[in-house]
Figure 1 (tube, rainbow, N blue to C red):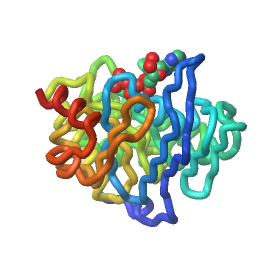
Figure 2: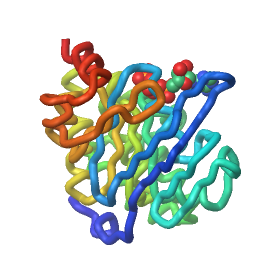
Figure 3: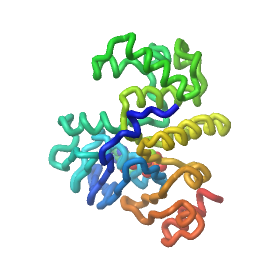
Length: 258
Ligand SMILES: Nc1ncnc2c1ncn2[C@@H]1O[C@H](COP(=O)(O)OP(=O)(O)OP(=O)(O)O)[C@@H](O)[C@H]1O
Ligand SMILES: [Mg+2]
């Protein structure tokens, strides 16, 4: 199952330093300091509107930001250049795949077609080579045999696993996942979460926005709580969930665990 290329890695730390982001006159991120070590799995939790998606999008160069900086491995993103497709952003996106709640698969392509598109276009792989890798990835996410299915012929959980395989096809060192199980029925969530656990074992760096407290407790090395534009608490899952230190975390957890 495990891919040695994923384990062989330089320092793939993801860092945001004093990151600020405004939309109009609304301060969304007000000085976020976050560091995720190579191979670490971090669950990012917090109330709706707290800035979790915004933070992930900044880390992947999808959003501009107003202050501070981001470093992914050796690549630095600065506020001044943010929002532009600079060479550093291209490099960051090679290192970090991003997966969304709504899959964002191409509806006119099969599962395999979705997976081979970027390796052929961006990495200039031959179709044969990309398809060989694509079939291996489909097996890795438990979808061997569904290569020729179109997205509308797949369940939500299967679609999300194709989206994961598609991200893995670019051979990233880490994944940013934004509530990737939120749209799924409970039994389909499990199959996607199992795939994440395997990726963690393979050594990928994972930053996961999730509302799955049980999963975060089980699979995360660290839990980070983002609320009101800043990190209000972070620690081991058991510390944060069982012995939260801040009132803001207590208030948030009392709502989600109610
Ligand atoms: N494109 C945008 N334009 C203006 N405001 C935005 C935009 N995107 C997000 N916001 C605002 O930024 C704030 C943070 O949004 P964000 O989506 O990052 O929150 P979140 O923590 O991911 O919430 P949720 O848990 O509901 O997904 C919210 O107040 C939101 O309304
Ligand atoms: Mg969000």
